Image (tube, rainbow, N blue to C red; front, side, top):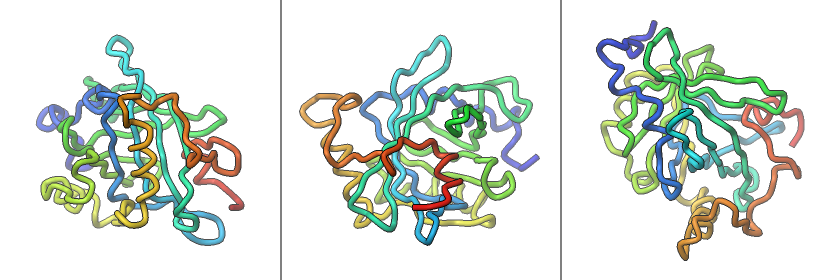
Length: 217
């Protein structure tokens, strides 16, 4: 097991429900990853951001809504959605994992929580990347351009040797940021409101796993 997979010593920092129990106005941005999702023919899917909706304390479930873009067409904003549930992972007794729909076929994956404080940043182990050693660092919107040093440190310490790629860039991701702002301004919450900017990728709302296996762009 990796050094962080220790329920006795570190389980208190790995509560999956803390990640799902968010206000519908909270937006998180993926700032670093060990592996980018590439686009056939060149480029990557970037500017990944998410909002949690329909959190259910009883079932420990929620819906995740993503906006993202591509390094090929930065002016377009795409939508992805998935259902997610807090469950035990890596033989823990507590719920330290997030199980989610990975693709349209219904395959499910589980990300283990390496660290979360529920307020600043979430570091996830993503087993379908980097031969089980993949990681994603997500930070609350207000910190996306000034990532707290402690969050960057734990990514670099526990994941950086596997790979380190920037996912968020202020200039490149401006359309994604503005889309969230358009969705939430005027107190409208935004979950059901659509804007002209948001385009299903290739006229389809893709699961993240299906994006990973695209054969054309």
